[in-house]
Image (cartoon, rainbow, N blue to C red; front, top):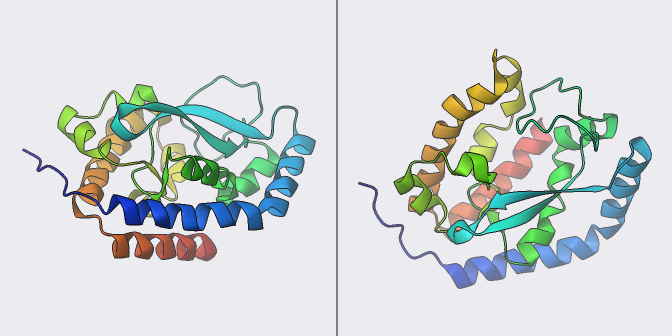
Length: 206
């Protein structure tokens, strides 16, 4: 049986989130505006994509990203490399992870943290083992975590699968859930800082 996660340094972690997210939104505002314009010019539709995800305590919230797909598509939840729904600007945003920047808004509003398990859509979160779900949802979801780094080329894995959605549901989702639990049960503030640095290094390296 999984242990109950140790009490996290919630106040210090929240202060770190605010200390980074709020100034970043101000400093990066010209970049965010430029990306929003590029998204709108490249294809019809809104600059931002909002999607329901499951957060702290099972609460559903709307996650923000820059839209990287055509506004009208078939609605499949997974996106392999070469997905025809992805726009030209969207390909660049995904490769550089710039599409994730609007999640700083979600961090500032308290729905997310800089580091934490990536939030799943309700359909997939419902497939977690109940004990795993209890642990994963005991903390705020994050923009990055060890799983994001390990699976940063997830779209390539999906592209190699005969059925990308089934592969995500039956193979990747359980693997990621186990890693989320491991993160939650061993998380520390210094560890979160290391994950942030590792994420930046991984993005630059790719």
